[in-house]
Image (cartoon, rainbow, N blue to C red):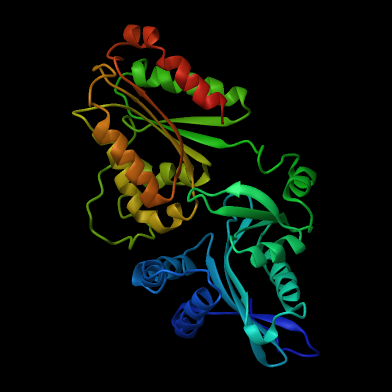
Length: 365
């Protein structure tokens, strides 16, 4: 979309290309500091650093769920800016990461009019509803004056506000358009099963989890990673973390799209030598070809793991720590773990109580 020439006090939007982001980044840091969004040196260093900016710039050039940086213009003057991403591959959420009006233009309704223009602009790109983080009291008042409502917190315990494109509460809007509310929307859950024994202990937990999740109204798909043709990442770097992968196997042909389309990933595994089994670790390593895209999706996850050793063993220490770190790095939201000690055989697992715990975890989603 291209910006139209401003006229008659009309506010318009101009897309900022990656190669012209230098001024945006300068003004962005000025806004974050002067408006009190960030206050300590560690945050200043992060938001001005190559890691943060590099991720967003990579997101600006990907094929789907592209990130946007825009200027607001009125009567030939630049009056503000915004940064957002619309997730067309999911449920149409438009996450507004940054939105600010320059100080000389505040206090006369310009902010409201800028958002109205942004709303029309993003609706053409598939936006169904809007979500933002906001902690400052005056910012919260502003967003609520536009019809945003509280919607819990994100994985970093940051308050979330949400609003549908119709201008009302997100629950009412989504119920009208989809028959579901945001909090009650059914999920597509992908079970990544890695046991060589189809009827073994880890898959018993998976079956119980699926039963509970289906009772809660969710859709589950099982994928046997052991029996699929999934080759290990060679570290060639050809994908540039933004695909496609040069390995044309089942991962590239089918599993990657299944992962993209899922709302939740469940890692199902027996513990091998105190760690993830190689076949499941292959799946994780191949995240590399779309790390930027996948980490921006904020998938929900769970871990179902079994081991012969009992609950008093340290057998789960490494896989649990690895899973927690993976969630942190990939911006996944952990929904729970069932770590089944003393589940060396199906008979042991039946007597363990972990089958019921897996069912309860699925049912609680």
